[in-house]
Image 1 (cartoon, rainbow over the protein chains, first blue to last red):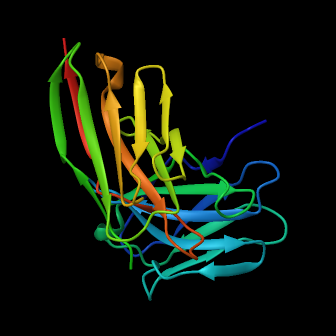
Image 2 (image 1 turned 30 degrees about the vertical axis):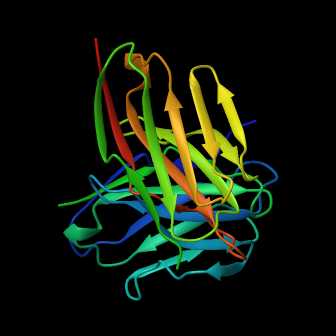
Length: 113
Length: 111
């Protein structure tokens, strides 16, 4: 019974490239949340998705960032034209229903060089 | 929007000492979660509190939610080096479907 799986664990991108971060929720979980943790800071909410729907994207930057959670497959957080300020740890969490407990993945550490 | 403030921001204690971390919300808490994060790693769930006055313990860690449901404390008894890490409180507000997190408390325990 695997937990929340995120890959890759570490990702290095040059400025201007695209970064794609993947999150497979726990079995039976249909709610996915993405968070960003900048160095020496707390976790900031980015987006909340259910299958094929974005429920709350109030924490997503308006440009270059997008997220999806297709009917089949993992949730994807996509960052286009990365800049050095995008360097951070990106965490994904999943829950069976909202408010019934959140399980976090180990995160993807993005470094933009 | 709801905001969570944690105090202290960092804490250095000697092994064996007790310590308390506080989490204060600007609005009523409808679900309060405590997580621990080891440096460079993911979040480990510790406890979840929902009812005013609720208290839960696991091993040497006790978490409480006050009666007004706007403040929670995490108390560690007889701290050990294995307790070192970042402690994060996360909360659900009224009619929201996501966790927002406090600023975190960095704990170091030296022998």
